[in-house]
Image (cartoon, rainbow, N blue to C red; front, side, top):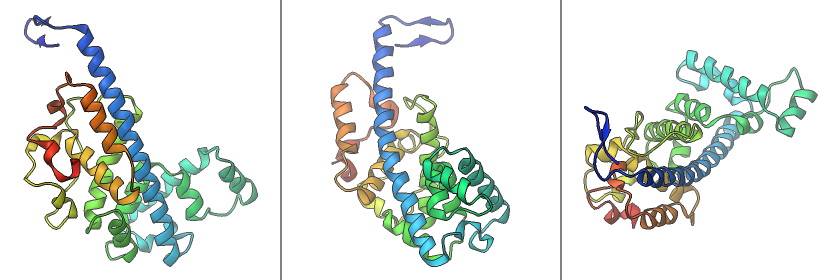
Length: 252
């Protein structure tokens, strides 16, 4: 369906059914990507709790010495407290009831932290912290700065999905950074076009890559390929899927 933006009239051969088809396609796309994000969020949370707590104790998130920006760290603590206070999880309610004057250990408070808060907390950890590099490596990346940019982009997409907004033909405000020595480079046989970076293609590819590293035998890619196959009339180039995208190693 096309619209004459000058005269505000629909062009010939525009059909309401096409709008419905694209809406349903986008809805299914968002559900699949949300599944991928959930897997990555669980993996990130578990790795942050384990690796940092193992070295710095259960209350490491309170220690400003572990973070690069003190002002941001203060905001992290406010965000964590807000999410902790409003949680209705039984183990959190029990913590608040039994230990009202005590801070919760990381394995409790981070369990109810939002993906956005986890992403910011990870990014602000000191770059020299070995645990930060370990987490990135276990997520399949060589550089923690790269993982930070990916997590920011994923948090952005997660918010779009959570608010039932469209991914169709959207320009991404946050895009993942790809460094030259990134293993992800082995998953692309040629340089990406600008439109592939700006549209959902790159972040979708990154989600598959992270799922490969954190949850082997996942079905995210299979579900996406089936969605595309079952909707041959949907022009997926609007999502940045062009330039022989299906021949790229990450999509084979």
